[in-house]
Amino acid sequence: MWVPRPSSERGQAIARVAERKQMIRITAHQERLATRLCLEGKLSGDSVDVLDECWQSASTTANSISVDLTDISFIDSRGKQLLVRMFEKGARLVSRSLMGRCLIEEINGAIHENKLVP
Image 1 (cartoon, rainbow, N blue to C red):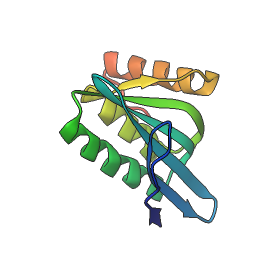
Image 2 (tube, rainbow, N blue to C red; image 1 turned 90 degrees about the vertical axis):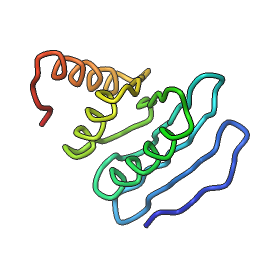
Image 3 (tube, rainbow, N blue to C red; image 1 turned 60 degrees about the vertical axis):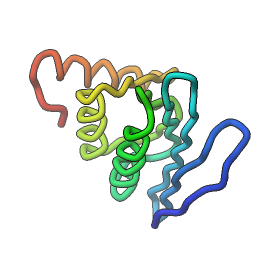
Image 4 (tube, rainbow, N blue to C red; image 1 turned 45 degrees about the vertical axis):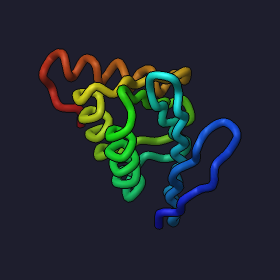
């Protein structure tokens, strides 16, 4: 289930998916030259489609997009595939967490070696 979220002082929380054990919050921060999408929770199941919609929407208005994976706790294979697509289309993936940095390295390596991310 997709639930729109109200504005907050730090950014516009644009989506939250809540069902059984899946939950994600996507907050868009409009910055001078880019839009930063901050993800919190699990990127799996229906939340992958919600992130895709948010990314497509932000892509129409922003010069560049960065995706902050710091607060992601789980990513399934569809989520990884979407992140690969976003990266290939120019989105910048960032993270302060170890898991997020490892995923970014995996995606970057797969792109440069023409391998698919499972």
